[in-house]
Image (tube, rainbow, N blue to C red):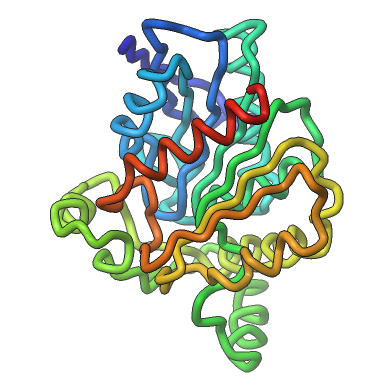
Length: 277
C-alpha cells in the first residue's frame, strides 16, 4: 500500500489535510471518502487497505474543523464550506489519479454531505456509496429545542456544544471504542450553526433523492442509535432501480468497524463488480 499525505488550500484559504492509499494492483478505480462528524480520515486507513487488496485506491481529507485540517472544531459558516471541501477532494483526485473511475463514499455526516453534493453540484461519478447517513437522528430534537437553537445560532453561530455521541454506540468492538476515546484528533463539538446546516441538509437530501442518477448503494445497521436506520429505509422508496439498500441486522453505527467488517467490505465490492465499476 502506497500512502501519501497532502496539504491543500481550501476556498477560504484554510489548510486542509488529505491522504491517499494507492493499490499495488491498481485497477484505476478510486474511492473518494468523506468521514463523519468529530472524526478524521486517518481512522479509515484499515478500510483503505481492504479496498487496496481488491485493486481500488482511496483518497480522503479531513473536513474543515476536523482532524489535522484548520478551522474551529465542529464549526463552519455554512454547508457550502463542507461541499467546497468535497469539490476540493474531487478536483485533487482528478490531478493525482487522472482517468480513474470515481466512486464517492460518505459515512454518517459524510453520507449526508455526499448526498447533498451529488444533488446540488452533480459532478460526474461512477457510483455513490453511503453508510449510516445523518438523514435524521435516531433521537430527533424537539420542536422547542430546534426553535431555541435556531434563534441562538443567529446571535452565537459559532457557539459549540457537545454532539452527545457516546463512543460505545459506534461499534460492538471494545477495542474500537477505546481507540476512539483515546484518539486526540477526535472531538465531540458541533456549533449551533453547523448543527442546523447539517440537520437541514438531511431533510434536503430526503426531498431531492430523485436527483441521484448514478448507481447508489446505501447501507445501515439496524441497531444504530446515532443516525436513524428507518430514515435510510424510507429514503430508497422514491429512488431508481440503480439504488440498492442493505440493512445489517443488529449492527451499530460504524459498519466498517464492526466485527463483521470483512462481510461488509465483501458486500460493497460485490455490488461494485455487479455494477461493472
